Each structure stands twice: as C-alpha cells, then as structure tokens.
Length: 327
Image 1 (cartoon, rainbow, N blue to C red):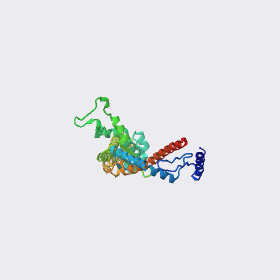
Image 2 (image 1 turned 45 degrees about the horizontal axis):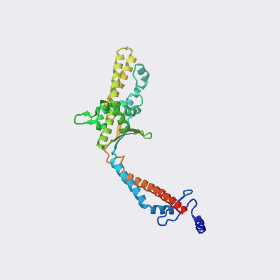
Image 3 (image 1 turned 90 degrees about the vertical axis):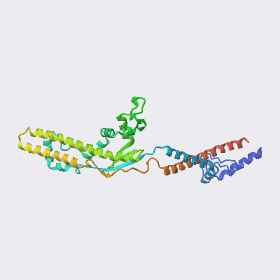
Image 4 (image 1 turned 60 degrees about the vertical axis):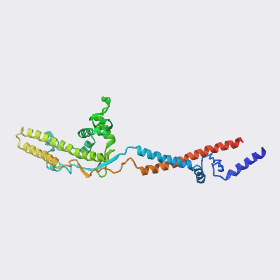
C-alpha cells in the first residue's frame, strides 16, 4: 500500500512540466486523455484527439454534407429577374412646357387647376409600390391562379377547395405578391430604381418584371391624360363665364399647357420610368448555391465533429481516472 501511494505521488510530480490548466494522461492503448481545470489544450493534444477519433470526425462531416445536399435538393429553386429603371423627373417630363405658365400659378389655383402636381419621381415610385396598382395588375393578368396554383384546377378552371372560405382573395394575392414576389429598391446615390421579381419559373419572373414596368407607365400616363382633360373641361367652362380679356388670355394659356401635357403623355411610352436594363430570364436560382452550401456544411461538420471528439475523449478520460482511483 505504501509503495502504491509513493508511485502516485511521483506521477503527480512528473506532470508538472505540462501546460498550465491541463491534466494530461498519455494515450496508451485504450486509455484516453483528459483535459480538466481551466480547459486549456495545446495544438498537439488537439491533433492527438482528432487522430484518435478521426473516423468519428469524418463521419459527422460527411453526414453534414449529405444533409446539406438533401436540403438543397428538396428546396424549391427561386429565380430573380430584375429591371433597372430611371424614374422620369419633372425636368425630363412635360413640365418643361409649363415653364412659361408658372407666373399664372396663383390664378390657376383660384380657377381650380393645379399646375404643380407634386414630385413626379416620388409619385411614380409610390404608385409602383401601392396596393391599388398591384391589385389591378394581379387582376388584369390573373396572377392569383399562378400565385396559388396548388389550389387552382386548370381543367375545370375553378378553385379546388372544399370550403369557399379557402379560396384566395384579392387581398391574399396582393399580400403574397408584395411580400414574397415583388421588390422595389431605390438607390439613393444614383436615383435609379431596381424592380425585382422572385419566382420558381425564370421565364415567368422576367415576364412579370417587364410587364409591371409597362403597366406602371401606362397607368400613370392615363392618369395624367384624364386629369388634364378634366382640367381643360373646367377651364373651358370658366372661359365661357368671363368677359374679361386678360382673364380669357390666361385661361387660354392654361388650356394650352394642359393640352401639351396630354400630347407629351401620349407620345412617350416611358412616361414614368425609363428602362435602362430590361429583365431577362435568369439561368441560375439565387437561393440554391450548391458549391457554397457544400463547403460551409463541410466546415461546420468538421468543427462539430472535433467538438464531439473532445467531449467523448474527456468523458472517457474521466472514467479512466475514476477507475484508476478506485484501484
């Protein structure tokens, strides 16, 4: 008994040359290393553990890669089609025709005509994002059938639902289109606007993006024409009510300005947005990047495998130490 106690004391003294915080038991046969105290570990010790449990580490890493491949395969690919737009400003648009009539702004206001109808760029972007415009676009192109294709029966051209309440409403279509499909981003530095459509069919994504631009230009052009026609009708009515020559001249000039707005709107296809780069069908999905996914999963798997190996090694070391103490 005395000889065994002396031997244990000699072993404890011999461990003094190890790094601080490490209680190291040399690997010999099935014996494991234990790392206690402050949990510090040298690169050599780490390499020994990884070498000993290399099959475990490689197995975990391979499992992570396989799971990543399965996740990528099961994930629905989404394609992003983008249109780069330059909003038409007041300087670019028909407002240059109105410069000679700015001095009559006060008189026009009294007559019920607003020559300055606000910032055209901000109005165009706001309309492009608006619920009213997008709902109309969805209705005109019957996008609800595509947005909720899992509920639509092509043969019978009806919603394949047991309950009428399960039929998607226009609001449901707009919510999905606005939150999951269409994105509008404005670059504050350049003033350019990027319209993005994300969908599982690249051809449809490009078609919707280009169609949205055509629709917003047509919508705002029609609004301008309608507003100017109403203004002309009102000005002509006021013209017939006055006999003052000076006021008649002003009204004639105001009518002329509104007619120029109509002409400019009708001759400019890109009335609100000028297309810098139209949308084309993307070749690769943006949400499935197999190479990057595999690399990241391999790195994560290796790190996780090493952590598991350290934990297993520490547990075995504690058990061996407890067994030695019991002896």
